[in-house]
Amino acid sequence: MHDSDFPDVSSAKKLEDILKWLDSLNCAEKQQTTASLRQQDTCQWLFDTTQYKTWRDSESSFLWLRGKAGAGKSILASFVIDSLQASQRKGEILVFFYCVFRNKRSTNASEALRSILSQMLRQLHGGAVDPKLIDDLVKAKENGVAALNNAKVLARFISTIARLFPHKPLIVVDALDECKDVKALLDGLVSLKEDARLFVTSRPLQIIKDSLYYDSSISMDDMAEVLSADIKVYITQEFDSQPRLNLLSVELKTEIYSVLCREAYGMFRWLDELMEGISINLEKRTMDRDLGAIHGYALLDACGSLVTYAEETGIITLSHSAAKEYLTGEISRIVLPQYHINWEEAHLQLAQSCMCYISICLERVQESSGSGSTSADGSKRSDRHPMSQPLRAYALEHAFDHLRHVGPHIKSVLHDIKILAEDIHEHSMMRNDVPERSGNSWIPTHFCLLCRVFTNTPLSQVSVAQSRLFSSPQRCLQT
Image 1 (cartoon, helix red, strand yellow):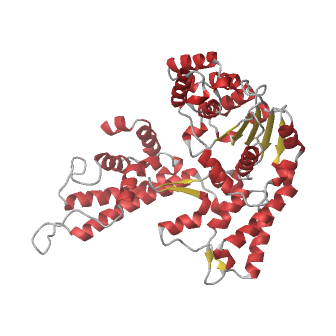
Image 2: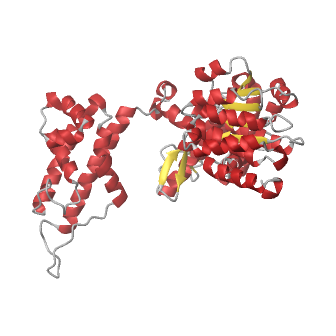
């Protein structure tokens, strides 16, 4: 959009101000990244379906691609976007949006609709701009943030703008099921059916089924044969493109190929994660599941696309909601219990690990400083230790946070708390500190008090203390 597109320069300025106010998410990078994951000669089957042909070649308003988590819906959505961009007709516009569970903004219905609205506004030209539309948008802007977070208001603006184009705009929205207020997003998109053509993807959640019951849809569960062919192409090309896999024996590669083709069940993400995350002992030319990472980056490499690593923050997150749901869900508990994660047991292990780590830190401090000993030059050794500072900080901050979620397992961790309380006391005696009052010790006051609360609580009252402590920690500590 340029000022030269508008006969009235003030209208262009108003529109530019409106776009800044909308502050919409740009999904261009997500589209580029997702499209790059597609292997050549895959996904073509979608364009051969009657449903897609009807949607693309007519003014049919809605097409829903549904499939289980990890089946490759996002890859297909990116392929649709690329295809539509390459075949746009004169006067036809395309807008798209990705809901991504790792990006909090993208899982908000209003954010999705604001992005669609902004993309449409940017593709308007001066002759098509309705002065009343500009005035209405300006009024909405002047009324503050309410309109920004109102899905119904945003959908009405989108409908109004859509009618300004010679053809119904093409709208692609991926992963509706990852939107936290999916009902609001669904209502907004469904209200656009008279003025736009929409292609959406999601898992077959009941709330989505109910809203799209009468609309055309493609079930990936019904496409087993073509998906199987795509999976075989994917596996073959992965073998050809991965140097590590090329070093395997023909027999082992044949076995891996056979297992993947048999077990994938149309799960492209499962394949992607397994192909990258599997541990392979190249020396023995065998698959070694006990092979461990010796460096942080080696661990990241082993996890592959299971996780996403942000270098600027150092934060690692699961790359897809499907991975989290699989690891904590019923399927893994029944089929692969060795990989299943039980929330309470996970928090218990983390709490115990944090407390054990703090005890190790205290022990290292004592080893490095001695009980009040001095160095060769007569100066007192500093209260230092060689342990990881970030991990120590995490352990101190979150050990008792994890205890909030261990449920009845709380009694099994009392021994760990007692040991830690004794270690803290011994450390404070060595330094002649009173842990509850000292500002010099690196053990926070509240942490020492929490240890005392649980150590001095009778076994029969532990659950009560746990409930009181975590519902109102300040009040409990004060008493």
